[in-house]
Image (tube, rainbow, N blue to C red):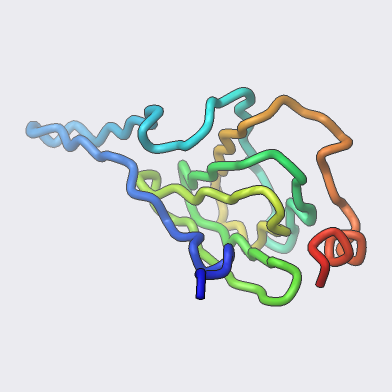
Amino acid sequence: MQPRKLDSISLTDIPKISDPDGRGNLSVVEKDIIPFEIKRVYYLYDVPSDSSRGGHAHKELQQFLIALSGSFDVVLDDGTRRRTITLNRPNKGLLIPNGIWRELENFSAGSVCLSLVSEVYEESDYIRDYETFKSFKGS
């Protein structure tokens, strides 16, 4: 039995280079970390802790999320099951494949979410209604 798509989603290590003189860390995202060409970059910030973002799925687009600062939860849904992954380290990223519903919530004060995506914005790629998403997935 093949693992379900939701089961295969996990945090990805981003190389962290620590300065030997204690001047901080540097992390680099290169093509061997992300399995797609980055066509768009955006970031979320100043999100109130009681707000949520996302609330959609993509037909084709893939997304790689990084908590550059602070923390937030990513709720993933494949149409039958839900799973929550907390992002809270700038050297950990989360690859979200297409066909997965996502919601971002529980933003800490000062959190910044960086999103690296495989496609330019195309409204027709979005599924913004959960019942439509379940129909799309055949759930």
